[in-house]
Image (cartoon, rainbow over all chains, first blue to last red; front, side, top):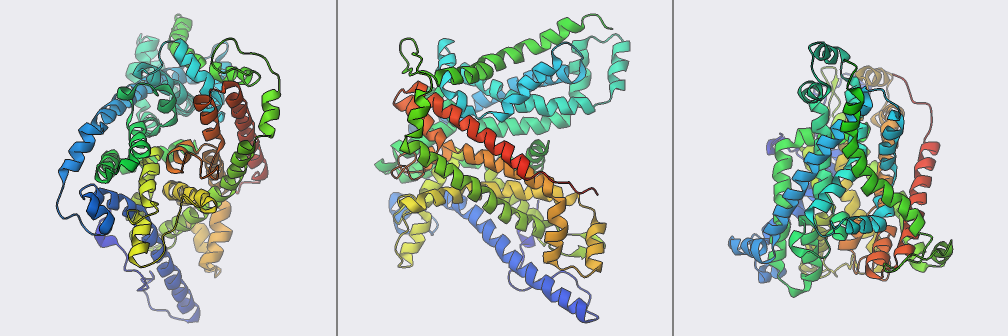
Length: 306
Length: 302
C-alpha cells in the first residue's frame, strides 16, 4: 500500500519528464504535461479529501459530547469518550445487529458458494437434457429488478413460516445471489482443463469426489472473486431484511438497525451515540478493505466485466 | 465412468433449482398475476384486469418517480463516468512515459485505494452518514463549516429542487472509485505502442484521451453505463433512509422502489404495488435494450 509520502505536492507542477527540453516541441509538450499534471493532482487531492473527510469526521464525532458536536464540528474531541461507544453497542443494540449480520452473511455466502458452484459445475461440464434451459433460467434472474418480486416474495416467505427468521433471510439471500454466482462460475469451470478431470475419472474417482477434491480447488481464483462479490452484496443488503424481518427487532441486521436508529431516534438527540454506532458499522469494513483491498478491487471488477 | 451421471447431475442441481424457483421465479411470475388484482392482503385476490395500470397512469407520485428515474438515468452515469474516466486517465496514463512504460501520476496506488473505499460500505450506512453531513444546522459537516464562516446554511435535503441533486451527489461519491478501478483495468490492456505511435505523431494529451483511450475503452464504458443505469433504477436504500420522509420533501426525491414499498407495506395495496413493479420491470428492460442498441458499434481490434 502506498504511504503518505507518496502524496503529491499540489500545484508545484511536478511534471514527469526529467530530461531538459532540447527543442521547442519538447518544451511545449513539457509545459503541457506540467499543466495537465498539476490540474489533475489538484482534482485527485480534492476527491480524496471528499472521500476521507466525512468518514474521519464521523469517527472524531463519535468521541465528542453533544456540546462539542454542535459548537466545534472541526476540532478534535476534548477526551476519548468511549462511553459513547458502549452506549451504542448495548443500549442502541448495535452489538446485537452486528452479530446478526455476521451470522446471516456467513450462512448466506457459504450456502451461495456451495449451491452456486455445484449448479455451475454441473451446467458447465455435463451434457444432459434441459441443461441450457436450467442455465438460462438462472441467468435470466440477472435481468430482473428485485423490486418486481418484493410483494409476492413477502407472501412466499410468510406462507413457509419463515417470516421474521434468519433462516428465511438466508435462503432468500442464497436464491437471489445464485444468478450471478452460477453465471460467473459456469464460465470459470468451462475454462478449466479437462485432462485433470479425465485422469481423476480413470483413477476411479466418483463425480462427487472429483468435484470437491479436484475441481473446486482448481477453481479457487474464481470462487474468491465471486465470494467477495457476494459478501459485500449480502452485507450491504437493506431492502430484503427491511421487508422480511420487519417485526422481529432482535433479529435485525446492521444496515437495518443503524438506519432505524437514525430515522427514529435521530431527534432524541443522542448525537454522539449515533456517531459511535455509525463508526462501528464503518470501521470493520475499513479494516477488512485495508487488508484485502487488492483482492476486493480485483474481485469486484472481475465480476463486473464477466 | 458413464454410469451414475444422472443421479449426480440431479443431486447437484436439485437444491439450487428448488431454492431459486421458490424464492425468485415463483415471486416474479406471481407479481404479474397480482398486478391484475386489487388484493389487499386478506381474502382471495379479485381480478381487475388493467385497472391498476390505468390508475398508475393517473397517479402523480408514479410520474414523479418516473421523472426522477429519468434525471438519475442521465445524470448519474454522465457525471460518474466523466469523473471516473478523468481520474483513471490521470492514474494510468497521466504521468507520461517512464522508460517506455506509461505510468500514472505520483501516488496512483494511494488514490486507487482511497477512491474505491465507499464501494465496500453498505448504501444504507452511507445514507445515514450523509444525513449527518447534510444536516441543516451547525451539527452538519457542510453547514457547520458554512455557518462558522458566517454564511447561510444550505438546506440540502429540505429544498425540493436541491434534494434530488444532493442524493445524486451521494450516489456519485460512492460510485466513482469503482469505475476508476474498472476503467484502469481497461486502460491497462491498451498496448503501449499505440500511445507511443500517437505521441511520435505529436498528439497531445487531450488528443490521446479522445482519439486513443476512449475508442479502445468502448466496451468497458458500455458495461459501466448499463451498471449505472441499473443503479439509477434501484436506489431504494439511499432514498428511503437519506431523504426527508422517504422520498420527500413532498415527493421531490421519490423513486419507484420507494413507492412500491410504501404502497405494499404501508398502505397494503399489494395489487397496485405489483403493478408498479411490473412497470419498473418494463422500464428496466427498455433501458437495457436501448443502451445496447444505441451503443452498439464496431469494437476496435488491437
